[in-house]
Amino acid sequence: MKKAFFAMILVVACMFAASPGFAHTPLCSCYNNGDGTVTCEGGFSDGSSAAGVEIRVVNAAQNVLIKGKMDEDSEFTFDMPTGPYKVQFDAGPGHLVEVEGKDITE
Image (cartoon, rainbow, N blue to C red; front, side, top):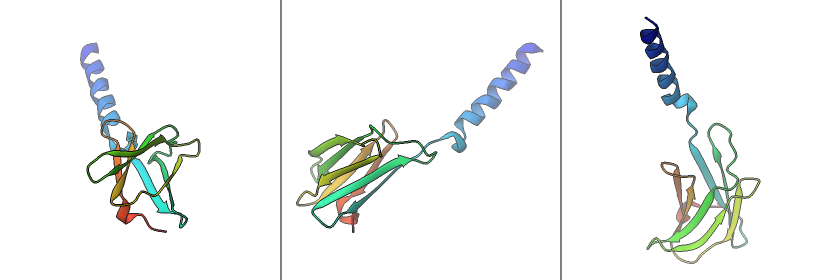
């Protein structure tokens, strides 16, 4: 009886741990500052900070043009590259957000 009870508790705990309510989806938004720079703001759907999360700016061939990390305010500012590019907010496996440069506006 104790084993069955323990197994039931384990199943219920796994169901809650796998539920979307416990997930934290990465979020990243970038905007053109109008002065030749772009600022990206990041975070997670559960309100967690993105400080220290890696940011990459890559060209169409996936070559890294700029690499850095979100600051303590979960922001990253960089000089806008020429030509097509995208911003990659990389919070680890399964947590990559990409923002196309053409979608970044003032």
